[in-house]
Amino acid sequence: MSSRTRFTRRLPAAVAVVGLALAVAACGGESTNSAAAPAATADQLNPNADLTKQSVNVTVWDGYTPKELPEKVKDKLKFPLKIQLHATNEEAMTKLTAGGDSGIDVAFVSGQYAQALNEQGLLEPIHAELIPNLANLYPEATQLSYDKGNKYSVPYTWGTTGICYRSDLAKTPPTSWKDILSPPAWADKKVTMMTTERWLALPALKALHYSVNTDKDEEIAAAKKLLVEAKPHLLGYDDTTFGDKLKSGEAVMVEAWDGWCPTDQKNIKFVVPKEGSDLWVDTMVIMKSSKNKEAAHALINYILDPEIHGWAAANINYKVPNKAAMDKVQIPEGSLLGIKPAELLNGESIIDLGQASVKYTRMSTEITAQS
Image 1 (tube, rainbow, N blue to C red):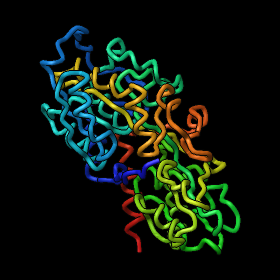
Image 2: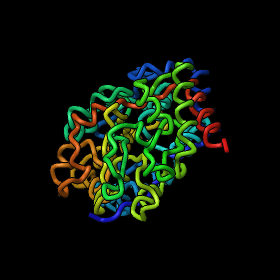
Image 3: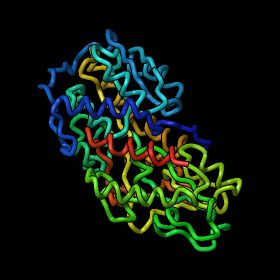
Image 4: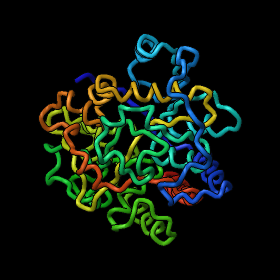
């Protein structure tokens, strides 16, 4: 398996998150309604549209799709594809919510951000009749809590969060989020956690048996207390290079997304703690402002082709919710690519919390800023 590109797509941008939350609130969006109906009636699309007269502009994380995708699309679908890059979800949201026509037809964003865009009335409903390759998805991929039935988004990759650790350096294998929140003496100052707001909070919320989507002040305060108490025992906060710290032995245990835990390395293991974890999903959405909606649907349909979609699993080590694609991927023994969809759905989907998201932004800023 080729090495993966490092993505910084989940790093926080507090101002953007606050702005998004307030924008949703101003629109009257109720963010806890994960299956919110589209805000406007779907346009009538022409299944026989001449795609050669359209073009598609995509915004996506660097390295998240094959570099040759524009050439493949031009050859197969006969229309030009232009790729723009964003480093984080928040950067993408700035593009998509700035007002007016962003010029973007298709955007790759994580599930809770797709939900927020939909609640602002910015997304075109998915016209399933124009995407026959939706049939390639696992049944579980139609039951994601932020968008049940894939009404306005199509899942691209999915995974979970857990503890990635050195089995040769850990005197006992970690089994609980408490193992990194209150590490044993042999792991003191050899543990990292994430700073991205919702994932910083996740270990503490789950250790307390709270929902990762709680907006209750008392529960968030209790989680903050655990995180403040954990800070003196951490090596540091790290969203991108924790795998390298494990390889060097600088870290013994780290909070990690499954696809970023380098389990292809000897003695590096991954575990979902007994208190449970999340289910994160990265999605494809079509902007309502797009003037190329038929071509946009054709692009998503093409990406769901097993050969194209399977590229993500083979090259960036993220599972794809496409059974036909995963059936073609050679999965090494013990690889996290082998996690079954039913196991993933044991995780709690992170949803957009609207204005309550500010509580997590504030907590993350205060915790990481404290000396």
